[in-house]
Length: 327
Image (cartoon, rainbow, N blue to C red; front, side, top):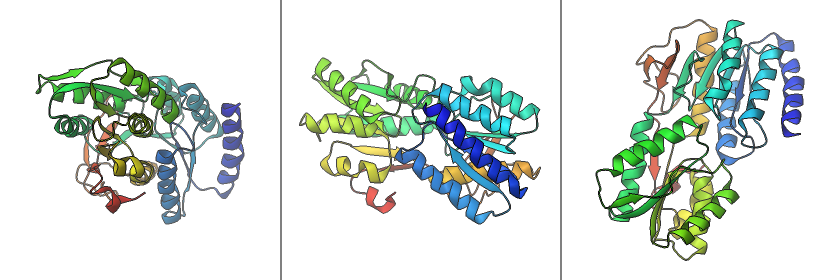
């Protein structure tokens, strides 16, 4: 039903947008209605306001489901949008559809998917291995570089999440007294499900000392479990999250630190790259996309014939610094 509703909205909105004969850039996120992608949508809207010569819109499935996301992308391609800016739930699921889209002349830009073969440009806020290692280093510091720790990912098919926890695991090898247990728990970006799984892990491992998490809602679920168990400040939690939703748990000590990039800026950057490609302009190292964190990007060869565009937008905050970046 959610997929059907999303498709109906796409059909109605796209038909209206193309009536003005302006290029349509359709952004498709992993899931609609959660803080991370609500924030990204503010970037799409800001890009639209600054670029009245295009139509920029955003869509996403009601649940974190790669099949639902695929259906939305397929419908947008069928409706003839000029460009797609996609944050894939699972890059592999979209490969065939994105290939066909490009064959019919649709510009394809992706984000959080540097392994996407069928894309013209994948836009990343930073080097993903560096980010995952940075999260783990902050976790190790909190843990005193010893004890049991575990990891959460949105899904095993989520490219960036697996990169981050993989880099974290590699970083932790520097500390022989850190022991990784029950890694790569799938959260599907569901804070309630993550909460239940975190409680289960805390029961299974009463001496668990740390969590490294990936999806935007993971810190909220794990933070709640830590706080309710009376373990705030005793069990360490470092993961991807946004300042506003994470604030109560940062203040209580249930969340040690959050890593993130501004989804708003990512939304703007994806659309900026899509517009440049629509205008047949070259993407090159050092160019300024006109977006904070993407003022001097690095451009290299991507996984396929497209390009990898890397910004410098990483942020890492704890309870002493997050209030400077509230969103």
